[in-house]
Amino acid sequence: MNQMRVKKIFIDESGRKTMEINVLPEKYCTFDCVFCPLGHNGVTTSKAFHFSETDPFLLSLSEQIDRENPDVLFINSMGEAFSNDQLEDFISLARAKGVKVSLYSNGFLLGEPEYARLASMCDEVSCEVKAVDEASFQKFQRPFEGCTLEQYLDNMAGFRKNYKGELVAYVCLVKGMNDGSECAARIRENLSRVNPDRVIVETVTDDKFGKGFGVSSDCIKKMQREILKD
Ligand code: SF4
Image (cartoon, rainbow, N blue to C red; front, side, top):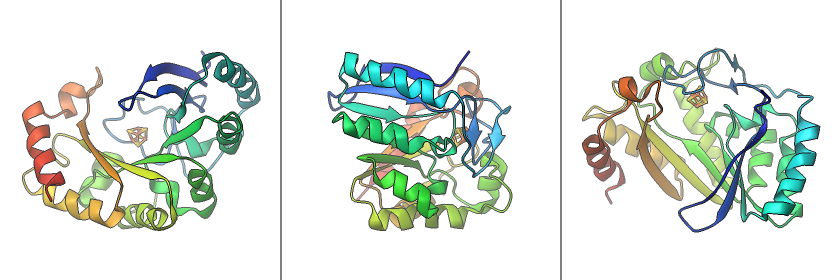
């Protein structure tokens, strides 16, 4: 099955009609998180690739945008959308049609000038702030060789300094990785370094890993209070 497609159309929390798409044929990501809902058979990479499925999908997407007339194109892929070397074509297509673009990324590649340029073309960019120290980052998120948490945070912070759109940080609470009482302060520190416009605290909920790595709703509320307090 071709995974590169419109995943769903929904109304977001701001009442905007949103078309969510995947621009990758299979999982390509800079990390291989132990709790990844996409599984572990993908490619762990920081590079961009050319996919033959992209041009046909761009054609069909253009028609679907004309038909559905969404307010937002939400690029939320099987891993890291920057891995598609034609990501700019998706962004340009939406912009040419007057549709806002929201890009979901784990945030690591925002430190690369070319990827930062692409992200800057989007109205909203989402990134992730969840690891609390180097050891847990390496153990739970398993990045490509040589990648460190310091570098990860620096990449997002550097992008923030120049980005004029809305930067949203997702804090995913993972059992055993960042749900301990001492973790909230560390997450706050990392968030203040990245300086997003908005923070969303959540947990792992998918069928496969939700039981093993998800935290309780009480834990989310408690951590949320600690992380977001003024
Ligand atoms: S960053 Fe997201 S897509 Fe990439 S391996 Fe981790 S959970 Fe999966």
